[in-house]
Structure formats: structure tokens, C-alpha cells
Image (cartoon, rainbow, N blue to C red; front, top):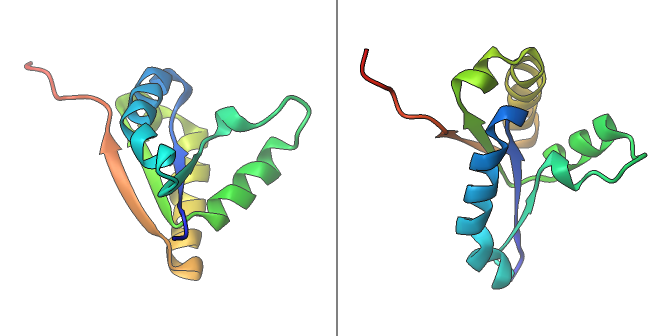
Length: 107
């Protein structure tokens, strides 16, 4: 069985949510059903931009962790959503799933 490659995009401020999500995905990784990748796997000295592009284009599924912080981040919006997500969906036929990191609070 071939692993489903999952790319996870998130804002640095949502790193705790990323780690919690990875705990939920751990059983699937253990069974080798999925392989997750996020920018925390980039080693020191590697070309981060190229690594991100490579893994984003290789992904079968793109998970975007959405929060007020990620939406406020120019990099997350410009790179992850506007440019790469559109490119991967249209050109590479990849699916994208948005996961909310926050719940609305009462006003």
C-alpha cells in the first residue's frame, strides 16, 4: 500500500496545534498509511524554500491549519494559500483541507 503524503502548513504561533494534530495522526503514520511533512523537518542549513516547494508539490493532501494568526501572516497567506495552494490544486490536482485551530469566542 502506498503512503498518502500529507503537507501541513501552519503559522509559527500555531505550533502547539500542529503537535496535537501530529499526535492524532501518529497511529496512521505507525501503520505506514500516511507520511506527514511540515517545515519543522527542515534541517539547519537546508534551503527551506526549495524544501517546502518540493514537499508541497509531492503531497497528496495539503492540510492548512487556519487561525487568526495564520490569516494575519503575510507569508502564510501569500505563499501557502494564494500561490502554492492554487498552483497545487489546479496544476497538480492536489486536495486541500482547512483545519480551524481556534473556536469563535463570545463577544
